[in-house]
Structures are given as structure tokens and as C-alpha cells.
Length: 256
Image (tube, rainbow, N blue to C red; front, side, top):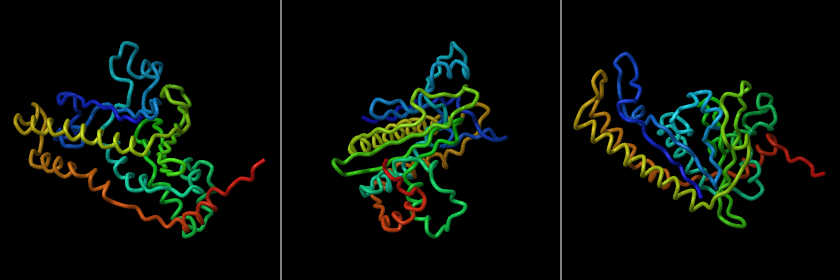
């Protein structure tokens, strides 16, 4: 099972940008979102962390407080590569983070570019959050068609920011479950934003804020078909080049 729950903040609570106090499509997605994979909550703060940052009596959801569209954009950007099956001998390379790689600065870029880039394309990073995790997605079709979801959280040395998930780990969902979760997330976000756009077209911006209504409606129309366009794309990775680079970046360790 995979799920991406979210909730948009009320329009009146959205933070306008700049001296003009502008509202636009991006900042109107301000809200809360999470990621649940195989019953693991990956973007949920601990109760202790919530109390330290928001107060012990806070009623704010313990999931991430940010612009929902940021996670949507990053996830959609990864879709074509994530849905390309990875050969069995490269699954471990794509299912782990780059922390244990050889020093990239000392390597010939031409030899490692393919492996480095394909690994990057299958990742979603939340570095815009304080101590936000990095996710890797890897599709394998043997012995069954599944997506491996791996994560790595940087550790807050002060112990203030902490999530309920283990600092690192991995789990899997079927590829169909992954696709369904992304489709549902997209559909719900587009519906919520269409409702918001319709409301603002009818009422205009709240007092003290500015809004380009024509641009807002254009942004909504542009994003409405983004997922279907990404799902229609097919990655065509040069696996031989990736293997050559992976052998340099993360050479196989001898078994003991």
C-alpha cells in the first residue's frame, strides 16, 4: 500500500510573496502532506519534535508543512525513470544512497556520468525541509513487479527535528500500487486546486493581497495534464554505460 495524504491551508492563511503580497498557483498549494509506504509513515514528525517546534498544545498535523506542489513536481519528474525496470545486477546500486560512493571529485566525469545521472533521476530529495529525507525509487520485475522505496534522513544534531520513521531503510510496494497512489495524489491535488482557482476567480484575492487571475487559470490548465504526459514517456537507459560507472562509484565488496 502507498498513500500520499495532503491538506491545503485555508486561502486566508496562505503566506503571500513579495512586497506586492502576491498569491499565485505555487504558494496557493501551501499545506501539509505525508508519504505512507507499506504502513511506514515517512514524512511524519515525532510527537516530541512537534511539541518542540509548534508547542505542546499544537493542533497542526504532524506531517510536513510546505507547498504540496513541490513534492508533486519532484515526484512527477522522477516518474519516467522510476517506471523503467532496473536490471537485477544494478538493483542494489539504485536502491541505496550515494553516501558510500567513491570520491566523485577525483573521478573522470565521462566514466561515471551515466550512472550518476540515472541514480539522480530515480531520487526525490526533500532538502528544502529542515533535515528532510532523500528517497530512492527502483523498479524491479524479478521475481515480481515491485518498486523498492529507500530513504535516508539526515540527523539533527540538536535533536529538535525528528521523524517517526527509522533514519534509513527500505520497503516495497507493487508497481501497480505505486502508480495508483501517484494518480490518486495528482487527481486530488488537481481537484483541490481547481476548486481554489474557481473560488478566487469568483471572489478575487483576499483583502491586502494581489492575484493575477489570468495567470492562475493558465497555471492550473498547464498542470492538469502533467502526470499523463510523464506516464507516456519511456526512459531508454544505456545500462552498459551505467554498469561501467556504477562499478567505479560503488565497487562490489567481497563477501565474507
